[in-house]
Image (cartoon, rainbow, N blue to C red; front, top):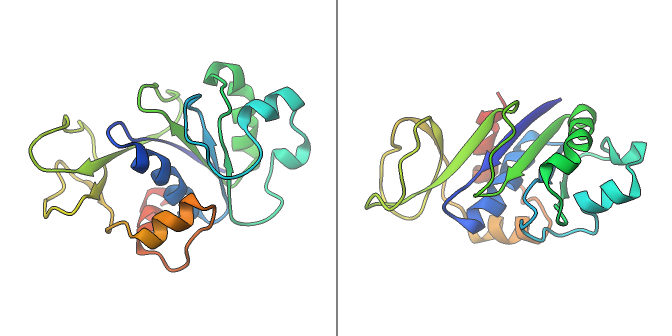
Amino acid sequence: MAALAIQTREDGLLGALAPLGLAAAAGTALVIDLDPDGPRYPGTGSLAQLVSDQPRRQDLEPTRSGLAVLRNGGVEYREVASLVSALIRGWPAVVLRIGSGLRPPPELATVTVHPLLPGGLFEAPEAPAVYQPMGFRMAVPGGGLMLPPLTRRVVGGLLGGNVPRRSRWIRAWGALWD
């Protein structure tokens, strides 16, 4: 069991895609959206629904391999912290999506993702981070992981609820699980 929190402050689309890429790189993994205002990921369940219905054993561990996503549904982390802990214990890999204005749980390692843009538009991160190139040739500032370009096929697949096969972008996220 491994868990990582992930946060993208500057880019909403990247903030929705990055957790999916990180989780897909792990193989069998669960993405849990801790942002009450987060994206409406494909699927029927939500963290709020799981809390109100009381989780069953089959909810707390994978029943098949692959990527599962639990969108938020309007609950705050403090309301679901014990449920999140139980999910982390039951899944081989868990990615916690943290909204741009939220603070990550201090007990978890947090990955920050930044679009790589010229002009100093956004404040440079203090620690090594993950960088997504946006079409400009630039060096990674201060160290970190530079992702390959994000293709339309990968974006469409992930947003449609499918993990694209043979994606360089998804494979690159695997370095964070090592």
